[in-house]
Image (cartoon, rainbow, N blue to C red; front, side):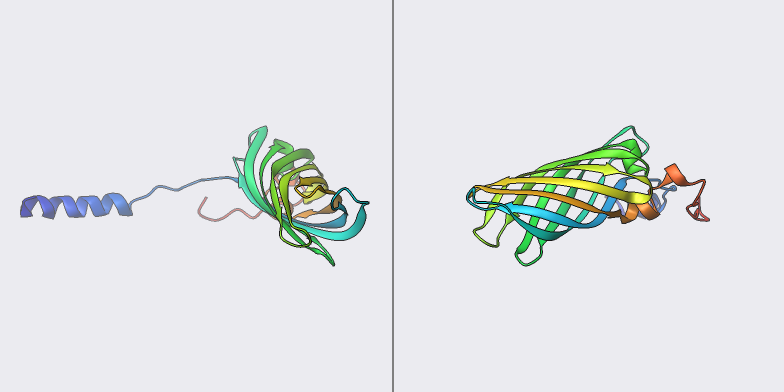
Length: 179
């Protein structure tokens, strides 16, 4: 390229890169923390109950839609035993993702390194209430004839604080000054 063209093109390229308009990317996001009980069985033996805690972190398509899809990571700690890790796809109703009433379904895979070890499919059904309150049922069916069933109750912290336009009349979200 000729030196004169470089003098013209470089500032033009830098100006193009530096200029941007206001961005408005809105995604659904979930940060759920809950507790309850899991019933665990190894090698088709009897079920043992274990107190448990679940943490979900994920994001998906815009919450303004009537159906939202996304992905999440999950830890399920069975106290006194160990922690299962999972990755799942999530489908929710718009009401669920906006912090109101709704339903979510997760399907994915889990891995257990403790005990006899196991991996396999995991499925969850979530009933969502106002302000991020959530009742969750889980099923894990894994290798080594592992079976886990759980029921948890907790709160989705982002549906409580950020994603709650269903309840803006009662508890307003602050609007940034740049909007």
